[in-house]
Amino acid sequence: MQQSESRAARLADVRRIAMEALIGSDTQNDVAEEVEVEDDEDDEAGNMSMDVDNHNKGKKLQRLRRLHRTLFFARQLQVPDWMLAPPDDLAASWMVLARPEGDRYLLLSDGGRVEVRRKNGYVQERYTDSRMPRGLTILDVVCIERVSEPTQPSVAVVDDIDAGSAATAPQVGEEGEEDEECDDGAEGHREDIDMDSNAGGGYGKASGKARKSKGKGRGKGRRSRPSGDRTYAVCDVLVWGDIDMAGAEAECRLFFLQSRMEEMRETHPRRARPLKLVRALPATPESLQELYTADVGYPKDSLLFLHREGHYQLDQPITPLALMWRDRHLSRFVVDTPDAKGESLPERQAVVLEVRGGGRLRTADRMIVAQCPEEAVAAAQGLTGKGNKAKGLLRCDVQSVDVANRCLVGVVPKTHIPARSRVWADSWGRIVFQHLHREGKASVLSFDALIRAASGV
Image (cartoon, rainbow, N blue to C red; front, side):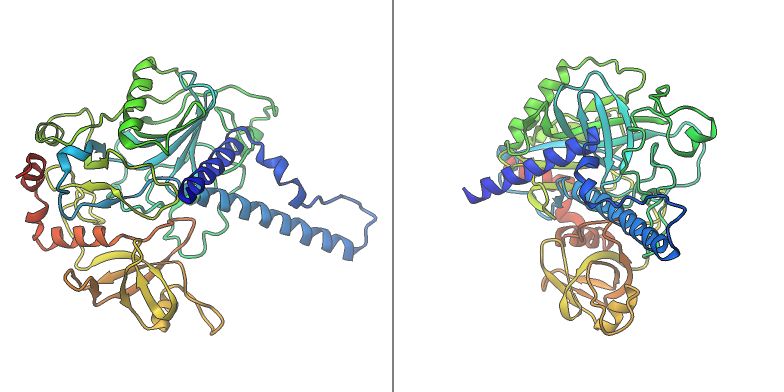
C-alpha cells in the first residue's frame, strides 16, 4: 500500500512538472521568489548596489530552479540493468525489443505541443504535432538521426546512462542562457547549454538574438520546420492522453502503446518529427532470431528485455525487471570506447561510481566496490581545503574487475561528473558486462546462450 502511494505521488509530480514545462505556468509559481529591480536615477549608490545584488540573487534562484527541473526530468527515464545470465523464465515471462542506436529522450506533449528532453533533463527541441492526443503524453523514445552531409567524427554513443552524451545540438533556447555551471569540469560538452526556458514558448518561434537582430516583433512569428533528419523511435509509454501508464505492467503498456500508435496516421505534419514504433515481441527463440538477424529498418544498439509484470520505474538508479544485452554482431559499441568505429579499446576500463564517506565508491545498485584515499578523491573532484567533502559521481580507471569478490582492482580517480551532466552511477552488471567483453570471456553471454534459455534448455 505504501509503495503504491509512493508511486502515485511520483506520478503526480511528473504530471505537474511536465505540464508546467509545456505550458509555461512555472513562471507564476516563481513570482514569490523573483526579485524585481526598479530603475530610479535618484537612488543613492548604496541602494543601487543593493538592487544589483538582489537582481543577481534572483537570477541565481532562477538558474537553480531550472537546474532542479532538469534534474527531475533526468530521473524519470527507466534505467535497465545489464544481463549477466539469461533468466530461467525468459520465454514465459519476458518481452524483447530491438533498441535503436542513438540517444534516449523523454518526449512530452500536451495538445500537440511537443517538448523533447535529453537524458540529462535539458530540452533538445520543441515543435508541434497535431497527431498527438489531447492531454499530457510522455513517451520513452530513442532519436534515430541520419547524417546527410559529412561531419566531424563523432564519439561512440553507448547507452551508459550518461546523460551528457547527446551528440546533437539543441534547436531552441533562451537568449544568452548558457549554463553558468559549466566551469565545474563538465568535459566541455557544448550540449549542456541551459535550454530549459519559457522565452518565446519555443514551439517553432524565433527566439533570442536571432529574433532581435532581425527586428521582428515579439508576436508568435512564423513557425519553421525542425532542422535535421531525425526520427523518434517510441520504445515505451509513461502517460498517454492523461492516462497514467507507468504503473501498468509492461505487457499491458506495450500493447496499449502499439494500439495507440496504429491509430495514429503515419504521415507526420510538416513541422513535426516522424514517430516509429519499436515492436515488442515475446522472448521466444523465433523472436530473438528475427530481431537479431533481420533488418528492422534502423541500426540496432541492443536487445532490451522487459519483464511482463514489471512497472516503469521512475526515479530509480536501476531496475532488474529491464535488462539490456548486446554483442559485436548487434552493435558497433559493445564496449565503451572513444573510437568512432568501436574497434580500438582503451587500455583501462572506465567506470562511473558514486562517492561515499571515507573515500568509498559504490555502484548504482549500492554496492561498495572500491575505496580510495580521500585526498585522491578530493583532488580528482577539484576540491581544496578541509571543509569540502567529496560527493557526487566520479569517473575512474580500473585495472581489473574481481567478479568473484565483487570489487574493483587498481582504481584510479580521474574526473568529477557534474550532477547536471549525469545523475546515476554505473551498475555492477554493466561493469561486469563490459569487463567480460573486454577480456574475451563473454561466452556465457553469447546469443546461443539466449536461444538456449528461451528454448528452456
